[in-house]
Length: 292
Image (tube, rainbow, N blue to C red; front, side, top):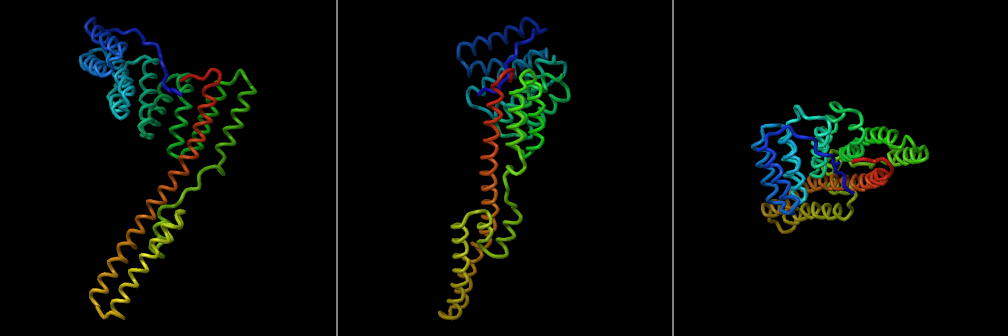
């Protein structure tokens, strides 16, 4: 599914030279010469005096970069935008794509910030249209309650002429976003404390039994080596140093490992839940009146 909102290019109050540069870049893009078009749009943006021309050139350059799977550079390009003096449609296109590319680049906080700007500075119809993607970004930062509210607002507007679809949408959103369905996340501090108190239990708390068993065995082995060296072999210094080395490595390593595994477990749970939410949002965004 494409989440990119394609809007008509508003007329530019630009000099003939600016338009020549811009149209040259458009021609290169239309011919499939994307790398050349990227350079041409950058030149058009660099030489533009009019902010409308500059904005459209940067937006088009970001689109071309996305076509080349250079998502990070797409986001970085749109971070250079100056929104002063833009008409509503162009400002929405620029902010929406900036939010979209930040979302695709997993910079969810920046994506959310752009959606808040849309809500604050643009008419309601623009804010409404952006809410499904806004909800997707909110899901990624665990703001599920806020995401649900944004989707209800969107559904109320887009399905207002079809009560059956609206009721089905609201019921599905309420069911999927129930608090009981939210991922039960592991506490990173608790995992580390358990690992400090009893080696292996931090990994066990995170849900990794064999990892926990291995750490426990190695820590006990360190103690065993030290005891054998001192009590049996009578190599006091060697036994203590060797045993302590093994003990310390797996005791301290187990604490770091516990935090890492708790993070990994949380990521898997969040990913599964957010992917389910994404499927629901995309399904309804494809129905009647949905606009992106």
